[in-house]
Length: 266
Image (cartoon, rainbow, N blue to C red):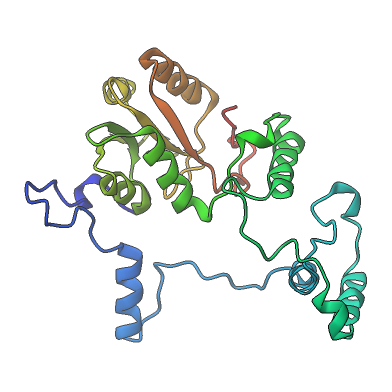
């Protein structure tokens, strides 16, 4: 968990780094140094599904995606994939040399068309939200996605609103691009069972800002922003005419309370 108190203050010396060492990397290094249990970094405790690993092996060997990204091929079995891999491994060398490899190539800047189509289908299936493949760009994780969005809409000196506490990724990316962070604090409500923000603080922060980073469900509080809160954020950004909402919804499926579900901003 990071707050604005943990951020390195701006320096007049351009030779000084604007970003401190990642807290996660620091704690990982210290845990290794002192043979301690590392609680700062998440480590998956289960392997990927066997079918996914077989599909990856099949794709690397064949240079084809075996149609797994198409809805009408989702019923391909693990055994069929395994049989295909065995067949590929026993092919004659000459046939291998003449095979057209469609996958092991440079990807288009926006990402492969079939993967972007799969993302579009995902939003349509889960949220009834239609988005064109041409409006989807694939990135290497959330870090690159946030960096790309900030670099696209922001210029040095522009203000970016962040709810605190926050994942350290946001502040570091803001600093790297010489943007100015503006923090809005999430606090427990009077009942102590939910997190809220001060509406006037949010209004003042968004005024004159270029973007707001909205993480919902929120890390580390677990807060799912409610419809009325999302509407207020959207309305305030529209009033500014040029304030973008950069959403980080990586935890969208990790909600366990029927009263508070994740809501997508279309």
